[in-house]
Image 1 (tube, helix red, strand yellow):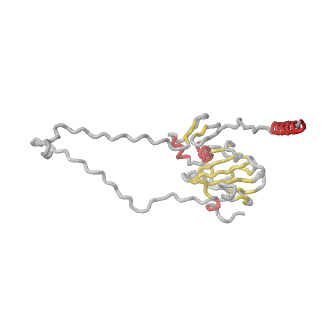
Image 2: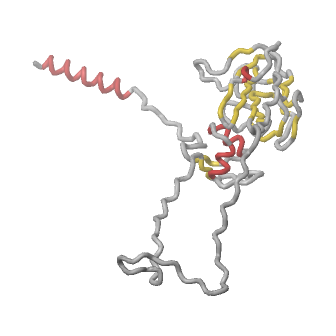
Image 3: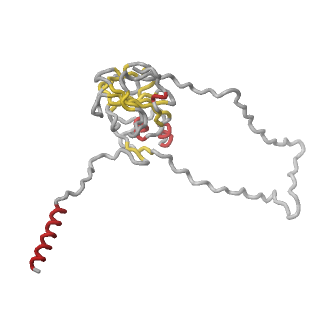
Length: 265
């Protein structure tokens, strides 16, 4: 009996010792919270376009939800709404009071008020005429695109990784060119996973992004032409030299291979 008690005590000691040697998981509380599902905290270097890019929304929607007007000035620490504001409650309809003069005894119809001799009779204004739109609606044509860099495509749009663009391999320092002309709306390294990033507003429909650059040759607010060298290829934000290229239409990713010409070398 004494021997059995010693064996039980030894087993309990081993179990307790093993469980005590397993470290508890440690949560990293030092990571800043940049965005939630509904709000975004503006950081230094952010622009409306970078906020829209990171949150996957159209910049015009965010501007409308936050009552922002061009040139869309943001302030560090400002909290931006990333979802539509709640709709105001409906205003209950109030019935117009019945005038005593217009009331008629039960069983008697309402008669029009007498008109004085020589008095002008007010006539209801006719409804405004709506001119029918004739012909076809003019739609801004989609401009042509060129390849932003030479090199081998190492990752296509979509796939198991959910790539939102394409990745082009190359040599460090090779030129990165604007695939379409437009205005530079973001230059910086504030978006996680993109390294040194350039975002260009190509027109009212499209934004294009060029990530993992080494040197940057453009500044925010500048206008670039198609084919202009805007950066050099690098490995910022990644472990190998590549250009990550994205195109978004109204905030939604588009497969660049559907817009780029087929002859790529």
